[in-house]
Image (tube, rainbow, N blue to C red):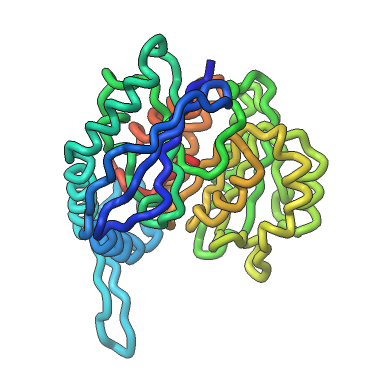
Length: 350
């Protein structure tokens, strides 16, 4: 019995607040609606605080090392220092962002909405997974760390609550069984991405019974035709992409950017079989927005550029959990715990 609550936020602003409605589903069928919820309170500082964090974070570049030293990046223009970012700056900005979000979620209105959700869903399902979906087109709300809400943080509310963010949500989720089929796609490694290490990580999952098909072959460059044919012919449980992306474009190699819309027919053919798609690339929300129309149950994307080492560590821990049959939200939580020492608000489950 799969239960879901959809939190719809269709209007509003951080200056004035956001009207909210709730929709409750069981096994894909709407069982209740709540249209008279309290309006989410204003939080006018959030866009500025988030943008400040993002500018400092992206200024760090992709220079993490195994020991995560306190390094400093300096960008120059005609001999002048124009921007300086340090790991300490980023950590301070992260704490400021986290404080802003926690203070917002700590306002009584969120407690009132939590009470309505608990009142509808908790009876009879204390240990069952409940999917909580935020449905919004607001870019900043999509980037918000909803995980800080007590609804998710406090285990006595919904201990198995699973957060998601998307616009389609009517396909039930299933656990993966043995002999999982994974299509691993490796695009451009421009900028020093260590895709060879990503490939070894994915291919090592065969020890858990997974069957991995990697494209392109080692030493070759990926072509649009190979990508289309692999999506068209396969019967994949998981589709994994590592490389660069921007908007709804993936970087196939150093000289070719491919609109994901050119893969529409191949995706349409294979999507009903896919349980999970992972895009280990920067700016993944555009890809997720496009793929949501194909009703893939779970998407994992990076909403900001992520240091390759951080992304690889997360994927290692996540895939080891998920390919052994654990629920997706449990696997994500365990993987996050492993990379908590460099906790940065970039990962998004869709």
